[in-house]
Image 1 (tube, helix red, strand yellow):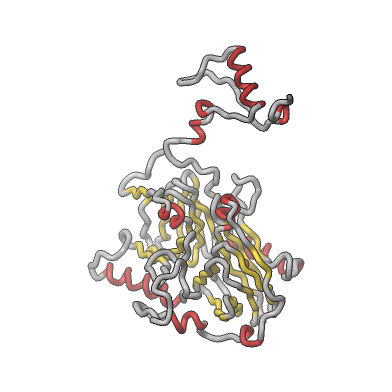
Image 2 (tube, protein in one colour):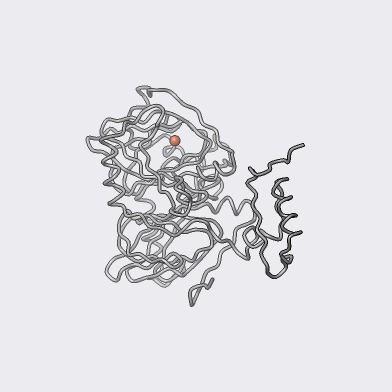
Length: 381
Ligand SMILES: [Fe+2]
C-alpha cells in the first residue's frame, strides 16, 4: 500500500517552538511526516495566517501613472488586433503582490482598453459584472443587449453580467477608457461562464444615438417605468452621465457653503452610482462612487473590509494608502487593499475628483463588511 501522496505531497510542516505549540521532538517530526503523507494540516501551525485578528491583504498599495498606461496602450493599438479570440485590447493592472496575475486586487480587475478609429470589438457575454469609465475622449459606442450607448468623458457605464456586448469606434481618433470587472472574484470562486456572440452587429446596432434606449426608459430621477420589473438585481440604466454626476457634487459643496450638513466631511462631496429599482449598488459585486474634494480639503482616514481601485478623474492632490503616499493627477490609478487606511487631499489651488470602485457589495451581502473612520489621528496597525 502506498502513502496518499508520499514525497510528492505539497504539505510541508515545520516544528516551531512557541506559545501553544508542541515541543519539537523526533516523535513530533515523525507525526508531521505522517500528516504530510496523508495530506493533513493541523490548525495549530496555521492559525496565525488563517485567522489573523484583522484582514491582512496579500495585495499591496500601488499606483499606476495614466500617461504611462496610455503610452503603452497606444503602442498596443499599433501592434495588437482586436478580434475574435483575444476579444478586447484590454491591458490589466497586475498588483505587484499577486504573483503577476492580472488582478488589481484579490477580487477586482481594472484595465485600460484602447480602440482604434473604425474598430469594432466583437460581441460576447460573461457572467462577470462589468463597467466602463471614461477619463478622456469620446467616439466609441458600447452596444449592450442591442442598445448602442455613447461613451464620453466622465460617463460611468455599468453592465450586469450575462448581457451581450460589443464596442464600435465611430470616431477618427483612438479612444481609451477603463474597464472594471469582478474577474478575480469569479476566478477565485470558480463561478464564471462565457459565450461568444455574433461576429458583426446589425445596422440598427451600429447607429450613434445621443441617448441609449436604457436612458430614455430609466434616466429620470425618482421615476420608474411601470412596464418594468419593480426590482432588478443590477441596474438597467446603461449610462450615468458626467453632467449629472458633476452637478450632484457641485451642489453638495454649494449647499455646504450655505451652511447645510450634506457632505461626508468638510469640503468632501461624494455620490454613489445606484440601481434605480432598489437604490442599492449598481452591480451585485461592484460599488462605484465619485468623490470631490474642494481645493485644500482632505478626506478623513478610513479603512474597510474589501478592496478598491481609484482613478483620478480631474485635479491634483495627494493620496496615502497605508505606508505609501503619492502626488496624483488626471488618470492616475491606485489600489487600496482590504483594511488598509486610505486618505486623500486636494492641492491648495485645485479641487480633486476621484472615481472609485470596490467590492463592498459582496461583503455587505455576507454581513462581513466593516469600516472604521478616523476622526483624529490615522488608524494604527
Ligand atoms: Fe466583455
